[in-house]
Amino acid sequence: MSTHRQHTHGHSHRHYGEAMLSVEDALERILAHFHRLDAEDTPLLHALGQTLAADAVARHDIPPLDNSAMDGYAIQAADARGASADTPVTLRVDGAVAAGELPTVAVTPGAAVRIMTGAPVPDGADAVVPFEDTDEMQRRADGASLNEIAIRYEVGAGDDIRPAGQDVRKGQCVLGAGALLRPAEIGVLASLGYDTVSVVRRPVVAILATGNELLEPGDAYEPGKIYNSNTYSIAASVARYGGIPKLIGIARDDLPSMNASLREGLDSDMLVTSAGVSKGDYDMVKDVLSQHGEIDFWSVRMRPAKPLAFGALNADGGRKVPLLGLPGNPVSALVAFEQFGRAAIRRMLGKPDAANPTVSAILDEPIYNNDSRRVFARAIIRRENGVYRAALTGDQSSNLLTSMARANGLAICPEDLSVKQAGETVQVQMLDWTEETF
Ligand code: AMP
Ligand code: MG
Image 1 (spheres, rainbow, N blue to C red):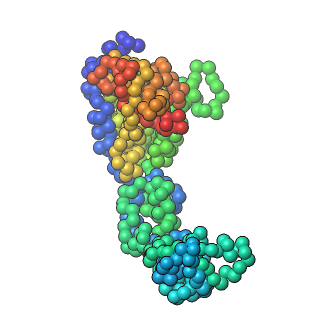
Image 2 (cartoon, rainbow, N blue to C red; image 1 turned 90 degrees about the vertical axis):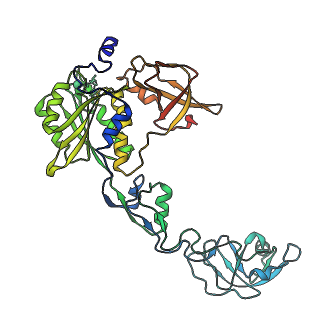
Image 3 (tube, helix red, strand yellow; image 1 turned 45 degrees about the vertical axis):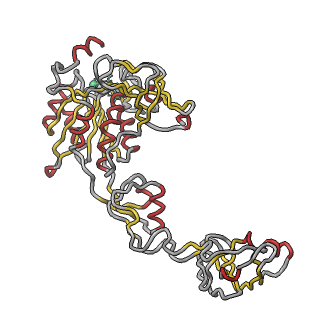
């Protein structure tokens, strides 16, 4: 293994025409092939995580009318002047208004209207007195008449009234094109009365596994074979980052099978393959991909996931379908997808370019870097005494998929350092947040 690494270090790998690319260069070249997709109308609740394709404009004020912030009594503030617990002011109750109703009586001097939170404020009233500042409870307890009410505190004009248009004005652009739709934005759109919304559509990402050794989960186990995991981890990643995975199965390591499979992916927005980019399969894959388009085979200055293929396949009507060829080892495939596939999906969804959220953490143990690549070490991040600390998941071989399952972040040792020592601060790209992380 290590002799192989020595041999392939630098620019000398006989299979790769190009020099080693930095992660940033690879990302830039990849992203140059992706742009924001077109708009589609989608039911509001399906739009979570998508971005708005057009400004959302308010068709009415929110709130639509002046309304009460409290359950209480709408009055004229001047009537409560001088009111206190010892010197309450008693007003006549002329009616009531509930949320969703329009008031049927106006408030006149010396009178009040019982009002519920959210109910429109009657004409004539300029303040609401909450129940707890009246003697209503006492009257109910005493069985006394509710045709009158005693006000026990002074109020100012406008108190506990929420003015029309306080949140949103009719005609206002409430959410601009490009806005990310989180639960709050979904709620805002609902409050504007939108049941469908124009969003940047989700990319369809075709996913192809390659290899003679692969069985599909559910197939009877056969000695010498392994179950295809890459399709599923990558499809799950695609879905997680907002794309629509399209599983197109397994291609065998031969030209006809690869050809047939690749065609299945040509109606997608991006095709992601796994395996076949390392030494053993490279020549065949290069041949078949070259028949379908222009593909480059790269060495990326990273560990895991050094070998990577990228290019564009020719589809019907002159359309080009970007192809991202991930390495076969399950951890390599996922780590490369986090760096490159995720970014491509975000671009297509109209989201800003950004890696996973990154935190600084103190290393429990060293990360070694023996060949000047950027190491993405599987790490378990926890918070201790207010700081993040990073433990590694153990053996960092790229075939150990369960170690990826135990990791919640990728701790980075830069390419120009031979080691990040225990106690040093590392940058960690978070894969997720759990309760333990905080
Ligand atoms: P290759 O790139 O074909 O040399 O594959 C590298 C390693 O990844 C080999 O051990 C393969 O068996 C393994 N591998 C390739 N494809 C998959 C897959 N879809 N699921 C799990 N392991 C895979
Ligand atoms: Mg293979």
